[in-house]
Length: 161
Image (cartoon, rainbow, N blue to C red; front, side, top):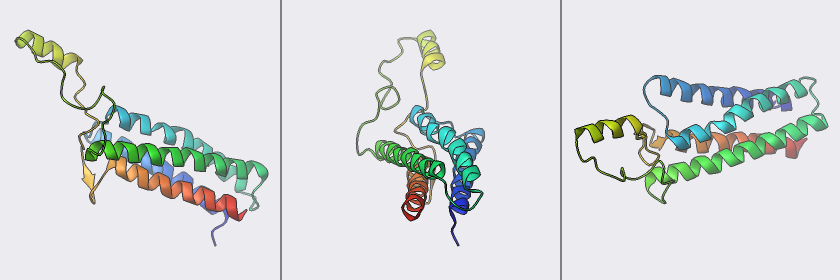
């Protein structure tokens, strides 16, 4: 039976595993772009909120605070799903991303010393270039899917309580 406690625990575990997976991919050499780093904020906030939700549902009956925390989790992960879908759309070329991390390098080096200076100061991780696809989705796409699932879990728990 899916109790509020078990759902809160599932949200916590899935959210923690997702951010841990992002760190593992980064450690493995898949450097995150600026949008990837911004997407992580939902997890940096969501994991502690999920832990509080677990603690508030341990008695078995969701309190008003637990319901509020589930609503907060739903909002966090709805926002994360939208942002992940936006980033995935940038990667697929459906729309343009921020100019700071998409497109070509704006200026060409005039000589070798200028080129070396550009290498030291230019961001090389682009937001519109996919570092890795897993089952056809980029990590941004998977973030959108996982975040949507977490939001649905939180919303269903609120509607049932």
